[in-house]
Length: 305
Image 1: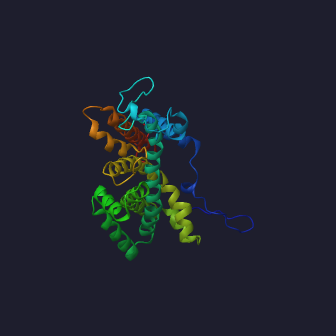
Image 2 (image 1 turned 60 degrees about the vertical axis):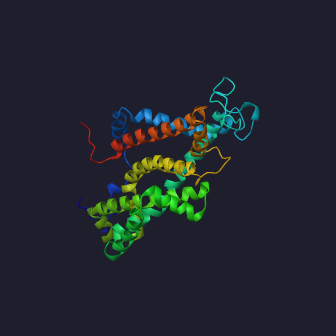
Image 3 (image 1 turned 120 degrees about the vertical axis):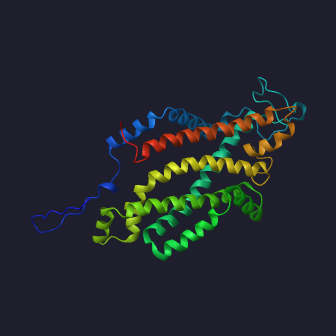
């Protein structure tokens, strides 16, 4: 796209118009919603995620019992009207612990992905925009992290830092960071070749301003779609670490930790592991369905038919 300039009566040159950097119009938003709603499973996925978000926010107010209160007289009770999800090996109400655990799991996933984006996106954008030796050095460092299997790298990091919920989130963020670095680099390489970016350079804009004002807004949708997918994977990984005893520690009502304690009673009280495990599956399923709809809405290759 060529940037046109028209002479003003006083001889001044008007500012360049950069349509690619402008906010999306209403018609574009309507088209994105149409593409999103065209996915038959995206809206159910969004509903599932919205329910879990509300549960994470309102869980402490919805929980009928204290999730940490022991009742040794009612250990491993099956589901009843008083305890709809039953009780665990210490007599704690599983429904209350699942409701509280929704908040922990959402925090695990979102915090890990946000931290990974804050570290990985700038690295990828700088590598793609600057190019040359800078690109080579940064991407080789990223490749070192990519060389390790994700969960194995997270286990190694937690083993070094110590077993805790916060360290588990740090470990998940570190192994997720290269994904965003690679994605941001590829998108930046594509955007920086556009004529309007060349026009920005010709106008004398600083590299920092071009990256923040022109390139980042244009790759944000791609990063957002990937972030939704990585939240579900981060929740799975963090729960896996807690299941192995490397994440959340007792008595925190984290779903992975609840699964770890419930596996010992699968034959006599399967509900202890069934409900937290079902919550993980349902939340991850909803996030994956939602991500599919977002991909259809924001992918520039998707066109109306």
